[in-house]
Amino acid sequence: MKKVAILGGTGNIGEGLARRICLGGKFDVAIGSRGADKAQAAADGVCACLKERGCTETTCTGGTNADVCSADILILSLPFERIQSTIDTIGKSAFENKIIISLINPMVRNPGEKYFLPDQPAEGSAALAIEKMLPASAKLVCAFNNVAAGKWMELDEELDYTVAVCGNDEEAKAAVKELVASVSKLQPLDAGPLAMSNVIEGITPLVITIAMRNGLKDVGVYFR
Amino acid sequence: MKKVAILGGTGNIGEGLARRICLGGKFDVAIGSRGADKAQAAADGVCACLKERGCTETTCTGGTNADVCSADILILSLPFERIQSTIDTIGKSAFENKIIISLINPMVRNPGEKYFLPDQPAEGSAALAIEKMLPASAKLVCAFNNVAAGKWMELDEELDYTVAVCGNDEEAKAAVKELVASVSKLQPLDAGPLAMSNVIEGITPLVITIAMRNGLKDVGVYFR
Image (cartoon, rainbow over all chains, first blue to last red; front, side, top):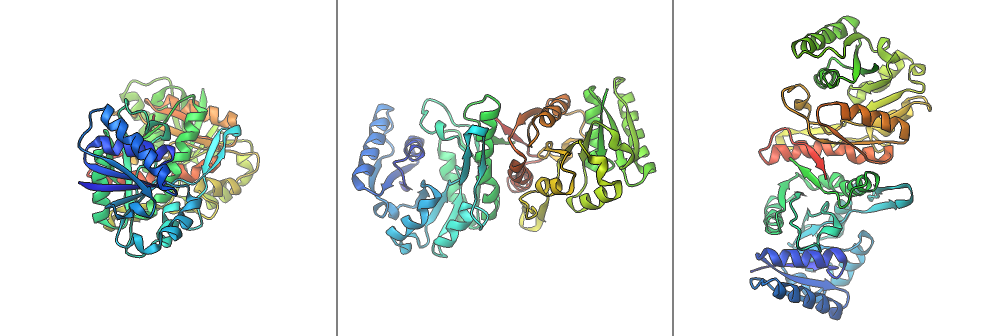
């Protein structure tokens, strides 16, 4: 069984993502965190959920962010501001040749005036900036960026969104599309090179703004 | 009857847009072009189409870009590169207090490698750059950016897309939402301030890329 590690997996999105991936039945999950205890507690919660739902195909373990990096695919589920220090702590070499997913969308929040806007670094996107922090052999792919955060943990609801997947390594992108397709009813779509992350990351503040201004909840995006 | 002028209305999108707006039955249309004859010919084509389809509520006329600027709403249906010279030719004062729609999406086309990318000016978007070219009293709104170009002229097909509408003047945005809602089954959504145009304009190269890479045609975007 292939394994996916979720770095920063004890956050809200991370824990929902871990459940959803395990429940898909195709990938084991390792939750990473700064503290191994916290990660283990989160993993225990996922295992309890799997048991409750009769899912026996997959398992979830926990460890420090460094511990879990042996997995086949690493998901960065951390605020953009913490990526550089997390890579420094783990050591850059742990990311050599790895398939790495960024779902990070830096945003300026302005709920008082009912809008969020992208707040991307000078490189054009979080993903393009993270690419520079990683070894050249790492294969960075964007995916899962636009799934409404609140939906990950609502396990009784199917996720039927289309998911734009972009990156510069076609094999890595194919592996990530396989992962995306294993989760609920998500439909992965090849969205071209990593430079497209500039647009994909921006869609999240857009859909949040649309939700706030049009009396909608958990707005998602569908390309069809 | 309120009137919408389409500057650069003899292009492919412009002519489809003119037909769709007239067929909506709520707005007359004036097609603008550099040459009045060309605009009149395009308007005659729209009128013939309206007659054929039994639409008697609305009409379409043609004139130079300067001629048609007395309309209630002006749509800029021109390549970004031609906006400044068009405003210079018409004279900036014609745009005082006007509601103006930009549907412009500057793109880098790379069909050989199967992707298009945004190619936005330093201001962050075409709309933010155009705002600086217009008088301060002009009210610029983005709308219609992401409707697949090929769909405008396929009049037998309903357009059921959601349309993100952004701008800094709430009244102007409400007027534009009314226009959007009059066209086929388009659903306008308030997408916040004009700064959101950075994201909205980028969605067009994204959906074109998704279409090219996933064997799809005329991909649209739905926020729901």
